[in-house]
Image (cartoon, rainbow, N blue to C red; front, side):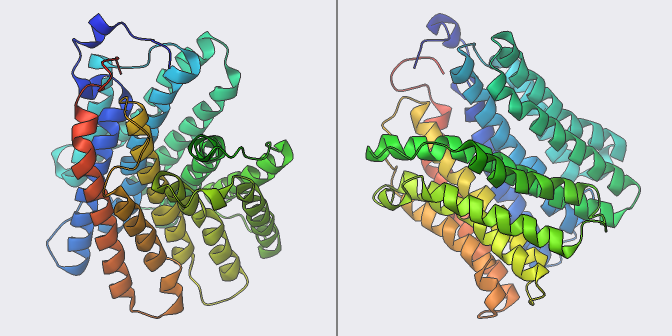
Length: 401
């Protein structure tokens, strides 16, 4: 990696503020644990927890616009430095961006401190600020390929604004549709980034080169997810009937499976840093299958499919990506930190128990939810235990970042 930041300047900045991945991976993971504990406790025990938008919608919103948003920001604002060779946000500016994110998280939990409109403004402002910070170096060197992430970030901001509009105006159906759209937006981002990094990481870790990318396959695999984003964002318009949706889902399923089959998944199972990525990514087709079965009239709820995407695809990929990216960007060997293999397995188990195993009625819904939450918390707890020292201390090779 090229030397981008002057060591003498970097040494004056606390390690946790030297690159965005550090503070956002740490705070996002910790917030995720706190949020799950709060929500799970409130769900199974009456503790009088009444956050902004209510406990149910708070959980849904914060797993996307709180937890996922932090990790997305940390990843993209770190990656853009490698893409462009231009120093990324750090120090005081990074701290201010973090404070913007965390202030909304606190106010969601204590909504009576300020008017709802203040919570909405602070929360919605985060993604545009990330988009501007990301766009500057990309535009400066005219690296248009990576500008694709800017409209996705602005789409997140739009969805978040619509969510707050729905909360303030008590439009529950709009809240639901917007949150479904936002989940598919994160899945779309995972699909785009995953097709870049998973084959690359697998090739580096196994020495087996993936098959060359096929543009038509990439477009079909991602376009179906993008269409689902706008289907929910526009309120599931009746002109888009079941036949159209089934066709979109079927094409997306086939192209996603074909695409991933070209990434040498069979060679990944010796290295947890690799199989965790591949298996988490598989929850995209699993979720699509469940949606297809729902549309075909089987007794499978949309919620089952939703949690394949949220617990399996999003949370699983986040854990796997954070584990690997944190090692590379702190100058460490790309080898699984013990006991992260257990954490990855627990995360996959959390996703399987929540969806699709929950569709089979083998165990009760309460047991399924409890086991999933428990495995999720253990997985991310292991990550924090092993990675707080890694993310909060300077690079071990003495380089900045």
